[in-house]
Length: 72
Image (tube, rainbow, N blue to C red):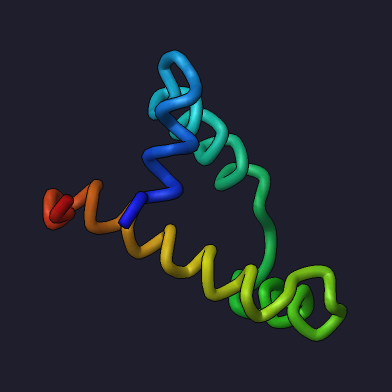
């Protein structure tokens, strides 16, 4: 099975570094309760359940990769 996170990073030079910089910018600018924000996106229809499920899966893959527990 193909990993969409690796596909996304593989298409850009310095992809991991750029992603980490963008995440740090996002993290510094984010205000509020993340769970509440996500629930509002789901409730409003701006994010579908399928999109949410895919984002959760990618986040779990990223977390395993960052902790060294990722198996290819």
